[in-house]
Length: 483
Image 1 (cartoon, helix red, strand yellow):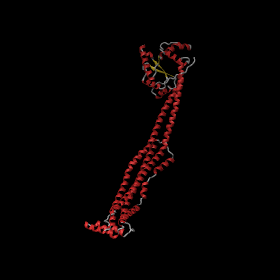
Image 2 (tube, helix red, strand yellow; image 1 turned 45 degrees about the vertical axis):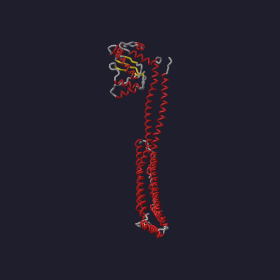
Image 3 (tube, helix red, strand yellow; image 1 turned 45 degrees about the horizontal axis):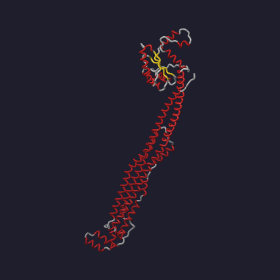
Image 4 (cartoon, one colour; image 1 turned 30 degrees about the horizontal axis):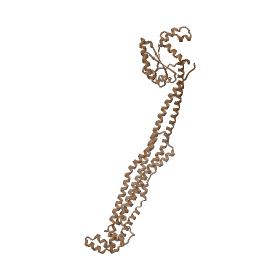
């Protein structure tokens, strides 16, 4: 038997307190010695709570029991200690010995002033020893494997490493569960960052509407001006225009309306569209770069220990630098010269279809109806007109409407092309960001997933160990020693 007298609980030096606590897991039996003048002090209560986690066999010793004046006071103290100790240790039975170490020592010294046999020491009752001899008997029986206390000692001896292992296992399980929970949170955080691209795409979609409206407004304005120019040109009152391009059949020189359309309507509109679409492409690219860097910094700041490969970083940077300019390409391929020429051809066709077959006299008579101020003069003009002239003039408004419709179709087609191109620019830009974030986030996602998988496996392994320890504990409890 090895008895270790630890410093106690109410000590000045913390290292002495730690020394006492460190011996608890290694001990087979704890003799918890209290003083009768102040049993179960605050420090002793705290130490009992610490002991409870190890589930050790505790024998309470109330020293200085001779300080009580009578048996009633002693019984009251014993009852108090058993009740509180049993509650703190969650034990139904509490073993308590009341002793007076000083009286026992004095009795030993007076009774054994001569040499006596060991057997006599065990069987002698000492005056004033109180229950000290009972405590001694209990301790000696604890060493005898043939007694119930001896069997209990053997079980306690075997249980000590098992309980230490259980405590270590419990601490490991707690740490691993906490780490797994953190790893799962990291994995959720990575996935949340990756899924937030959808929110960004929706926001960009909403913000791009104002850009599309500007382009559509620009085209609508150019369309309206072109239509107004066509309507103002295709009037019966424009006799000079008719005479120049129908009677003289002069097709070599450009019509003034063509120059006006090109210089005043189409060219300014195209330049403004190019400027807006260039700014739109820059807006998409700069937003992508800013958002991408924000995601990159979020990953690096939260998980600084994860370092992506240089190749993946270079590939990701290249994705982010890509600029999508389909809209710029569409407006760049639009030919203002071709559009102006087509417009002039439509104007010429209307004039030729309407007045080309009349000849000079028929044309002059037809035009008189639009310029003579009185009804009688109109009748005179109509008399001069041939039946073909009347038919041609009656078709003039429908020809003018065809030009207007042609202008609208051309403008609408360009608007659709630009809107589709802008939408593709937007989609490709958000797809690029999604590819960028997926690429830079993959190492972080993989690390978090690997940690979750590894810690889950560790938890399973610890569970197997826990089952084995429980089985071992049952085998120890069922231990029997043949006598």
